[in-house]
Image 1 (cartoon, helix red, strand yellow):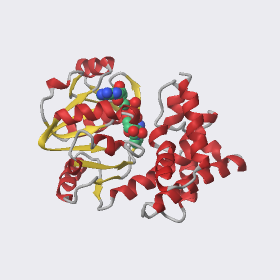
Image 2 (cartoon, helix red, strand yellow):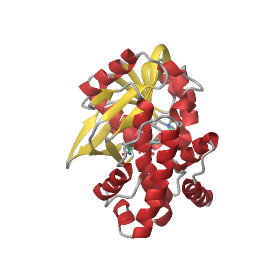
Image 3 (tube, helix red, strand yellow):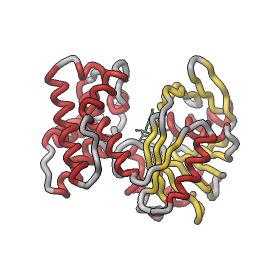
Amino acid sequence: MKIAVVGAGAMGSLFGGLLAESGAEVWLFDIWAEQIAAINQNGLNIEKDGHSRRVHIKATTDPDHIEKADLVIVFVKSPQTRPAADIAGKLVGSEGLVLTLQNGMGNADIIAETVADDRIVAGTTSHGATLLAPGRIRHAGTGATIIGMWAGKNLDHADRIACVMTQAGIETEVVQNVQSVIWNKLLINVGINAITALTGIKNGQILDLEITRNLLQAAVEEAMSVTRAQGIQVDEDTVEHVFQVAKATGANRSSMGQDVDNKRLTEIDAINGAVVRIAEKLGLKVPVNLTLTALVKTLQHLF
Ligand code: NAD
């Protein structure tokens, strides 16, 4: 299978690297010239559990070098999904598929502006990766990857992708209703990301003060009502689950926190902002998410 990854940062390089190691023909595409030059010069260096290995993989800043691919994986941060989707639309062959495992809501809808929606596979992953330097990443955590068809009913497409990913060591499950999986992951990011981004604290510090815990709970409960209002099932104990995630990842800065620290655009529009947009359409009020979104957007306006 020929695979093109659009956005060869931490996650794109990780998935591209693992798929290349399993024998797929993989191309990494990124607009970040230093990253591509380092990978072309020295290979992609993947660190895991204190060991490092080198993967030889094709990488380019020019999508014309890739020609058509059977699978295009979009792994940019959500503010860059639109230009990445344009590239994905050009790269995907007529029988090809586009996969997004990005965080947040709205990425698949943006990709559907350039790719037929029955060719889009979406989902979530619990793998984690960190960029250490150009051409060097750390595989920081492993876990389940869950995918499904965004609009189409033909699960054969998703099954095919799951098979290729599982062979590459990315254990992947296919589900019928992937929207529910994406919303349930979103609820975690809704509770943790904006609060940590705005305050500079680590995930675990949310639990230190009752007032901060209450803020997390209010943001998540609003998002749970928006999720349920769309007919999507939400686990009753979601708030408790988000507290558990904050505890388990206690020493980490959330990805949105790191974006703010590095003065980069955040994924706020795809996380709390998505809750606000959908709530408006449904006639629901979500003042906590509206406030968190407004504050993060105000902060990033200063970058
Ligand atoms: P990243 O910032 O490390 O990588 C994004 C890459 O996209 C960068 O290399 C950037 O140069 C590139 N890019 C930007 N605009 C582009 C364009 N127009 N065309 C091609 N490339 C472009 O981000 P990441 O941590 O890999 O995250 C990617 C997505 O995966 C996000 O939605 C994130 O929330 C999600 N995610 C990340 C993790 C993680 O552990 N890092 C885990 C699960 C999900």
